Image (tube, rainbow, N blue to C red):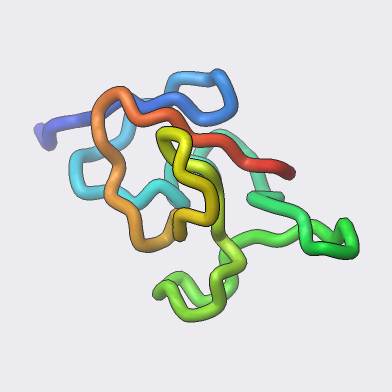
Length: 82
């Protein structure tokens, strides 16, 4: 059985297989809007490989972190602004 890590997304704990990306944890909880554009439009992962920057969230207090490029760590605090 693969090892798991537990992180908190918008105040909700979620367990993920070790090596999973933060974007997958957010989607697992049913969140589709990761952030809002300057015009208030909902944004979420588009490319899945770190080029589009649409998946940016706040991770452990660091704003504008690309969730599709960040591996889940135990105890990580993730915040979307969707």
